[in-house]
Image (cartoon, rainbow over all chains, first blue to last red; front, side, top):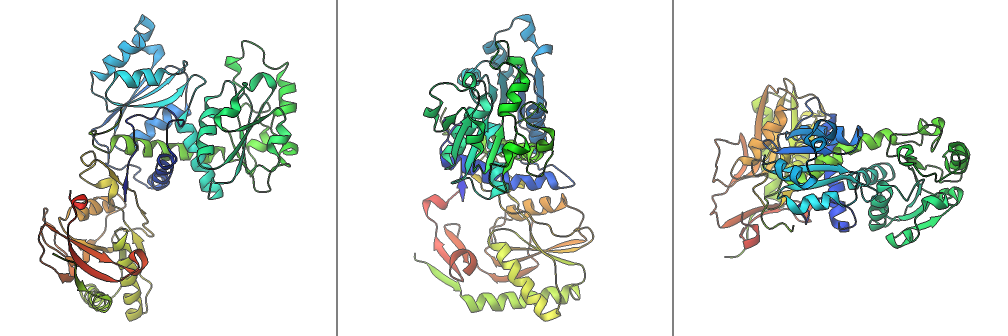
Length: 314
Length: 183
């Protein structure tokens, strides 16, 4: 059987079809084995070049993309903005065009403004992967979340997923709402009224201000990081009050299904959105998510860079 | 040209039984043997071959799967990528006699890829190749050690091995290539 993605880029899960998401997940399942080997490398993408262009801080995502590229034998180049020409005033598009002139096969980009990867994708011929654009989407994170749930629960169809925290500023939440609902999960988001954007239901989820209500009967609870660096305005009175109402502890967790799993995109603020006993407890699969992240990104490189470029929709 | 049946279920079983005896004769028993099938049908044949060998020798030869997909030489050339299959090396293959099993030997490119994949897992003492059908048209210097049936074919024909587990019937057929099957 052969299959392929329909676009040259991965910009978000909103535009992917269910079959494409399933193809990425099943490919990623096979790639998990490569990371278990003594020689953690396959020659599939040798000679290909991947540029990681990160305009925002990242440890997990950037390292994960880099390791994934290297395990596929592609060459990975990392550009962090603090040491690049961006500080000399180069525009985004000029940076992209100059990078393209060095003939990369893929640019992985993270930027604080929503839509940046889309803009770059239109101006370059190589593949572009969105590694997070503002509060818009973070598709590879949602894919690794889905892979982790599939690994632990066997299926995504029919499960209840509760996403709790700052929904308004979360690209992880948005990609997960698209992805999980396309695969048949029931998604409920919860957070303080200041952090639930009006009309979020249009994305295909239910919304509530009560964490308890969202967690009740959930198969999967996803806690979002309180982005302290984005809290210029105050969305809640104190971290302590937020933690009491929305932080995940054993008491709140008792309302979920018996064999619930807990996801968190990291980095975690212990004692704010999740208590240490829960983060390190038996239901937490936070480190499995990180392992699966490498497999998902290997699958993305394989599917985007492994086929000939002819006849791909731009 | 219509579909020709070249081996039926009994012929396939007899060929596997002969190959099993040949493997045991050449290797003087099952000591150090590991049987690895190339998914999908090569793995099913490997499973059957193991059952036959175990029945003869009262042994339990390690069985696994070696997927050559990530080692192929046509990545980035074909418009679609082959789906990844199972890689399962159950024991260390260092200093083992590996019997690699596939259904049809054609250009030899899959076997080259599978051997490269194996080398990433260790240094076998030897690799021997068993195939149910050798249809000729090699593009690489590769030869099977054990062959169920040599079938001279035209490049306009396709050879299909059908197995109960994967196809619901058990036979080897030669049929004219459809346009979509051509590379």
